[in-house]
Amino acid sequence: MRHACLAVVLTLWAAMAAAFEVEDHRLYPGTGDAVLRIVSTADLEVFEPYLLAYQAARPALSIDYTVVSSADLYRALRGGAAFDLAISSAMDLQFRLANDGFARPHRSEATAALPDWARWRDLIFAFTAEPAVVVLSTERLAGLPVPDTRQELIALLREHPERFRGAVGTYDVRESGLGYLFATQEARSTDAYWRLSEVMGRLDPQLYCCSGQMIDDVTEGRLALAYNVLGSYAAERMARDSGGRVQILRMQDYANVMLRTALIPATAQQVEAAGGLIDMLARLGLRDAPEDWPLPPLGQSGDTPFTGFGPIRLGPALMVYLDPLNRRTFLEEWENAMEQR
Image (cartoon, rainbow, N blue to C red; front, top):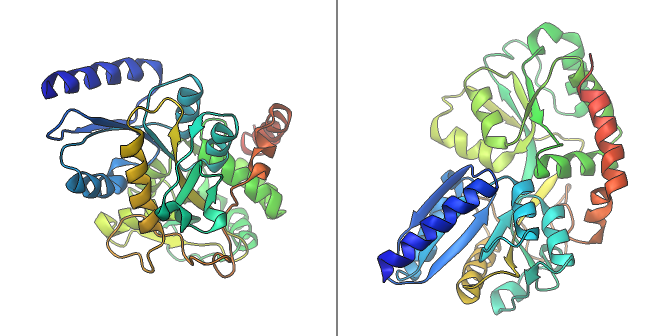
């Protein structure tokens, strides 16, 4: 029976792969028949320790883990794709799924312990707080001043265009849900965003779907810098094998801090198992120190998160730029700035 169940899982995965682009996939067989199906934007390299820890506590449970883009995750769940848990870095898309009835409620002592800013109506639960950072190639920037603010970064790009032409990476916000979230939040918070975008646009910027690809290209020297990538991914890569070739900068004038969130889709079948994993992630999110887990905790667990830069808030304000007219207007301005000819 167990082998038959796993065969069904693989068949379903093949069908899903045809419906949207699967970036990675892994099946962790358990000793029983139940299969927890997870769709996530978190790379296996950083999320596998959480999956293994959960399965160690429930060895009978098989875990089927599929990595997709945040935009594909959103479209899949709105289209009725059958998953038991959805984990995403695109807070706005997760919020809209929950607000539009595509999530099931979950209540537990673990989630009740989360501060108000890290959960919404027992539907969405944050378990990490991850800043957007700039990743620099130390070799490509040798001899140049290291910028601390966007104004300093703008000046650096303007004064040394030969160093940066074709060597600046950032998100293609038309395709990346996280990139769009970071861009819209930054545009609302600092006037320097559009000036920086115009300067980048004159340097033939390289556009990406994902943080991991940008960090890889900085590490290999194909990029001089990558803008607004996830600091957690950059730190994990540096810990593995950067060899001092990469430097992480958190801008001192303003920093986006993304809350990675989980929700149980309305189509979920393994609801109890999905809720159990959310509870584990919630408890880890409230830990006092990073410890050995790849992703950082939420930070302070009281009512006021962080000192200085706070996280993007879970709430209806996240949907402002998901309005079709607002989105179209923003993307037109972004294209005018970033795709100059």
